[in-house]
Each structure stands twice: as C-alpha cells, then as structure tokens.
Image (cartoon, rainbow, N blue to C red):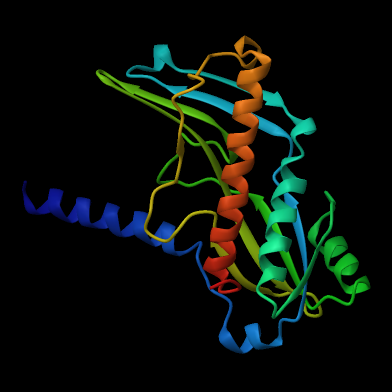
Length: 226
C-alpha cells in the first residue's frame, strides 16, 4: 500500500469514528445534579422494517409494515420510566405524543418537569443497511448468512426551561456496532405476511426486548443510569 492509500484509509477511519462519537454526549455532572423530574417521550413510530442485503443488488429485498398494535413506543417509554424510577433519585413519567419539540417542552413544563427525554429514529452511516427504527435484518455474502432483530435510535435530553440540548446517546454502547438479537427462529422472509401468527408474535417479543434493552443503554450513555 502506497502513502496516498494509507492516508486515505486513515482519513476514512477517522471520519467514521468521529461520526460514532459525535452522537454520544453525556449530560454534564452539573446538569445531572439539577435533574429531578423527567418526562419520557418515544417517537419511533409504528413501522417495522424487513431488509435483506444479498451478495449482489439483484438479490436485495425489503418491506415495511405497520405494527401499531405492538405499541412499541409505549413499551419503550414505560421501560425507560421504570428504569429511572427504580434508581430512586429521579421521578419519571411518560408522555405519548407525536408533537414537535416546542410542544413537548410545554407539555413537560405543565407537569413541572425539568428534563425531557426524547427518543427518535436515527440512522448510522457506519451501518447504512440497518434502517432507522426497528426491524428484521438479514445479510448474505457467499457462504455467510446472518439475520437479527434490531433497534436503532437516539435519546436526547433537553432542559425544559431553556429548551437546550443537555446530552444525546445512541441506543447501543460507544464503539460497538449495532447490537442484534440473532434470529434463528423464525427465519427471515421477504414478506411480513408470510409469517404465521406465532412467528409474528415471536418477532414482536424480540422487537420489544430490543427497544427496552437499548432504551436502558441510551440512558446509561446519557449518565442518567449507572
């Protein structure tokens, strides 16, 4: 490898790593000391993503399906509130709303909250095949064949009074790739309608497990949980 190639590789890696760390900013200790009452809002939406990345583009496949009956946002927010309240230092409640940030801050203020935690969709440039939100992803490459249930989002902390961002964290740990619940049963299918009722229920449970686990991870990334 010549010098130009080496410099290109170094620059590419530096840019990729900067992209990862740029989305992680823990709440300052001074701000954490002022956090007492928290409102949690999850806005991942009701879309389940099925995606296959094959050896060639001709084998790629994807679909989207509405799974509003799964109540993903409600389950995520409930788990985050429970985790925060179990700590004993903060008081948290959930708010179900699709409103924009200004309206959410007003709603949080009406509850006398000092901090708003907003969970939103996020993509990762280092893992572009994973669509923002949650879904079932499969990757095939010659003899390799892997699939998993995943969730991909960020949690942002806002000061309710000032509206300023206090911190932001991915739904997975720093420096790690997107965590997946490795799926072996049911197998990935190119249409959601091809799954049986039992298989759909298995997928639903895996999604809820993923978003609730990763919600806790993002709270830890913010410094709000040990």
